[in-house]
Image 1 (spheres, rainbow, N blue to C red):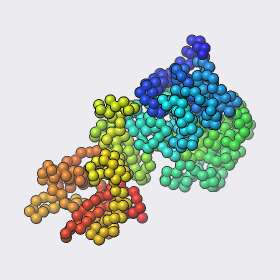
Image 2 (tube, helix red, strand yellow):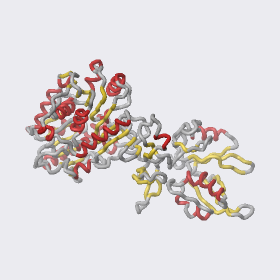
Image 3 (tube, rainbow, N blue to C red):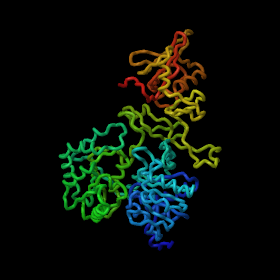
Image 4 (cartoon, one colour):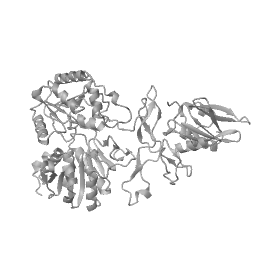
Length: 605
């Protein structure tokens, strides 16, 4: 390798956050081989981070991208250091692997694995949110192939949007924030560095977006937003909505033209191919063009180059130019398509945030009614109901500030939430930390807000668990519990519609707490608790308080019935109550909370 001249190196000196990303990568892979992710917003200079990692590596490095534009861009940045690198991409008419660092397209590499028989120490995947867990996917084929030649292969992903619409987060743990994103299996283990978009804008590294709240017309895509976590919209459904909105399209494009009078580059994101062609028909023909996935590569490249050279002002596209496209002069983004993907929404707007001479902002107009927050995209668990909002809940065990769906009162105070387990990462105990098989010294906090108790050992498990994580005892499925109880003559099951708390005196005139559960038709089951001694109070806490509290992170240790009754607004009702006949009375044996199954809950039609 021929080292670059000092002037070349100075030209591409890393920004402080880029150096931090590189340092985080080196430190992480010194401790573990677990896959890692770096999150950098569009325009943050991922290519420079990749180039620095390639330069520092002692052994072979393979850098993958899904489009030839990114392969070429990453390769150019690396060679700007004065080093040589190979390119393996059919779209660029090059298939070379002679240099230490190779930049390849995932399609070309996956089809020519025999060309990659060397030991690679590092695999870098650009736009890594495209990686899935499917064994037959091109990414997994490449990873598996390289791992057979080097079992210590390090896999690093870079992306601005670390989540997939079909499966959620692409990593489990966010190490800088010490939080768990998901317990589902993911392509990567941890996020090791993340740079917020807002920081990039405030620091002057990206152009400020200016979201205009007064579009002249909106497409009515609400009828397609079914609320059932739909992932993709069908083209025929979109066309059906747009068919009745031709007048709206004409008015929208007229407004775009008027607002773009002083703008240099306008990108319009259409919903379908038919829609894109209609949009193009309303634009000035001499300064407008369209990009479609079906276009021949040379024709597409010609249009893109004309746009970059400012020979055309308006560029219409359908799901093509969301990644791997770099035209810094773009200062107007018009969104005419719906998307449930927070990541895609960020990528679309990111096309207009790169810095360019005389560019002061990027105008954003959304005509499709998308509701994503550009700075805090909503990618949490499905919203339980329309009244739910994101609430911050502090764990009583590790003090981590969790974000869950919940409900608030008119003052904004949290009434209840639907969090199951604390998302915080805490330090391992000495025994675990000293275990050579431990990859990093953090584990998920053990505190559970909602849980299913094991009847064998008493351990708290996730409410959907089928086996105890502590003793491996099989946990009875709620549907099975209900089905078996309904078969018994000496059992009663009520679909609980409400619960009330009352004073009660036993036969010795001693104060007790009476809990009455009732169904939709007024059928009741009840139970009585004594709270006189410490042992009775402890039993009440574990049998009633812990499960019934709307906010289980709040500690509540009542010493008498009055304490409980005056705080009954803090408790929730179970979904079902199961009782068995015991002499002349019905003794409650089980309460089922957070039920999701085949049986109808109270007040559900």
